[in-house]
Length: 328
View: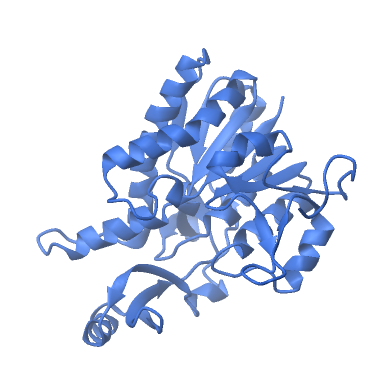
């Protein structure tokens, strides 16, 4: 039986150009979960995770829109989005499973992910969140709240940046792995570590403390897949392939590709930090730790990628040229 971790991008739920209503999110979720239900009907063990970038941004805007309610810290907002996105996917995937004759409940779990308090990211925050601010607003927020602000020349405004430390450990990982080993993966679909998980640092006496940070959800997905003994990792984003030479005359899309070749492209600077690089790094990390294969594609082509006929498929060895070319 195959065990797969599927990482949905936050834009799979809240898409560009939409108003961000609950009805839109529900319709988007319905289209995303259909191939997952088909996988489950074939006996595949599914662990689902998701991004939360648009959703956390909306919560930040809601907090700024009122002074009558005290604002929550960023780790609490991350936990909040794990809850409501988890509920949404629980509803829609649960219904799709029942229609496919699969009696598996969908169980969302608010998941803590340990990071190091000494991670360099805390001294050099880089992850942009929230809206754009004027010069005066940026100065005031820097003084009053201690925020780090960066200027976006293209947008003509300032934006808050927060640390994005590397995930070290899934706090609830050991008990979740034990559940899967005892066969619970065949009885339920686990929904874990949404938005990269709630970032926490370990303190004395076994206590954990939340921190103002955002963990890259693809890096957490790779860690989750390794921690839970998954065979495959699927990263769903807003493009159907990874490309080299992106937006240049030499642009080429990658089909089946050996991990060694993909790493050469990565080290050659082919992938941007704010876009495809974390996804490629996550796929390579998973493969290097013994994963069978990693897929990078969009929701529309996901079912075909599982069959090996679409998307970018990363394998530990060079693919058989009779099946597909490395680059297409």
